[in-house]
Length: 315
Image 1 (spheres, rainbow, N blue to C red):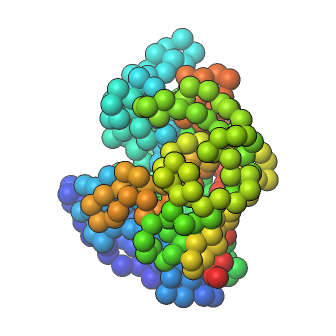
Image 2: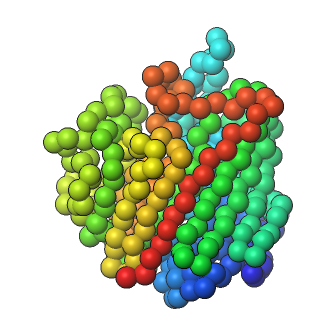
């Protein structure tokens, strides 16, 4: 394990990078945003990162960040809960994306535990931050095993009932970060996907059959739609998402009901569009406004927990 200073935020808070090695596999995180900064084997890193803390603070994309209390979009930046309407920040056109300024991925976390190949980071936020009800206590434990499995174990409690959707926004490039992901081979065992409008707000849950969203058998990412995807796929319990690039194979498992697959079409700055692909385990977009979706809420006195695991193999 190695701990080094990564930088200082614009408001004067020091940020660390904490690194671990398990056999040939490695990962590192930042205390800023609980960012997954690196993950790979030997000299191959398969997640995109920024070179400086300033870039994390100023560039878009949420690279590697833990996103909450609600990841993805909420239409018109509002929702009604138990008869009360809550207004959020409009940071994505007229909608709310990734909780706006209340996003966990834009805050400095504390180190609350370190193991042989694991680290637990924690964060507390005040009531009504970004318009979301309740103060929140959130932790994430990253743990790596020698077979290349990286487990992300999230825990969240709140003082008030609040819609919740936690995810990690890592961009994977299984060519070791080189080039784009259009030639990655993707398999997603999803019978349905969430169709969206031009604002990426849900319009319907549809069958993948006969659509460009059918990855039940392997397809190149760029085979259809020019490789442009930013949609939730509906997962059954035990589903395994499989991706293969030139240097590595990645599998993802989660106890969440959906995975948002985003191919980084909006990347810029120090990365190019389509350079990475996100597998954001979580909830359907805009679930607080769709009671028919599998939403989840924090409740006072209860702990919300969710686990997502990635397994990486060298080719």
